[in-house]
Image (cartoon, rainbow, N blue to C red; front, side, top):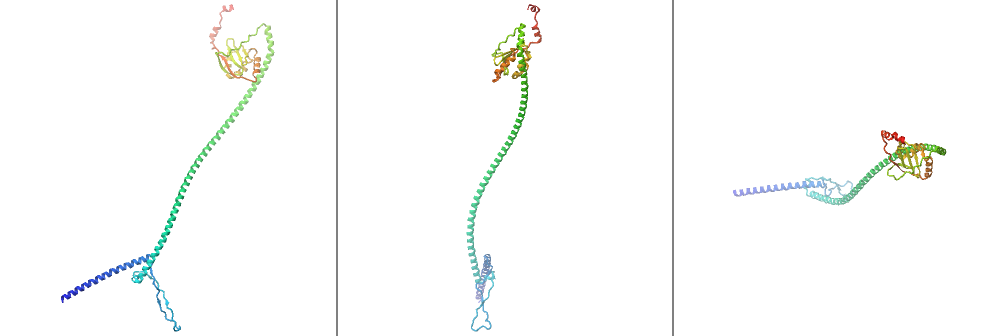
Length: 369
């Protein structure tokens, strides 16, 4: 009896343990099911399903109206059922669970189809973006090339501007130089005009002086025969005409250029000046001071002018200088010659004491003479 009781209690314990384990397992499964239902609610919410619509609308019979004919049956009126918010408690019903799962699957499929369309659109957009990127790259390259061309053109313009500025500066400088040259030319022109007026005045004066000398020469020529006749009557012999001076003498030096003379020589002992003309004629001037000859030589290229005003018709000459000079200019009128004039070096002038001692003559010698 005790054994049966023990066995019974053992069985009761085992059954209690089994019942407890089963209850624990059911509880675990219930928790898992609740978790699954919660997850399904979240998935459905993510899919946009927040309410559960009934599969078929429920209908209720409406009693026949009074006065209706007998035998005529009235159609039941449909009563709309409002959607129920989707919760885990609602999903405990298997039909509701199946409907929600079906809706979720339909939503997932629609989302997949939408994603596929979106993917195709993205592919098309990517293709367009690639084309646009290529076009942008081409446009960028063209823009860079245009920028480089613009920069080169800017440099060319800058260089041209510099060249224009330099040319402008040179032009202004040339204008200033031309203006200065014009002013200088005008100044020189004025000076030349003044010089020409002075030269014309001087030439007029010289012409008048020459005309006066020519008139004096003609008067002297008219009086010369009478004077020579008087000298012949007095028994004086005319002075001998000097020979032509040698022109190829090493002692002669060039002192200037003249239109009349080729050689000049002076004798300080008797103060005689010898002149050779270009046409071969010669003149001898008497009693010409040494200082006059030195001034004639020092005049250089202006000796012709000095001769006309300081020597010609001033000192006595043999032959008469008016006749010789007139003959010379008659031969040289259409072919004047201006060439070198050579003259002999004068000996140095002795001091006054030596000159006096050299000039003293013994009384006996003077008596003998």
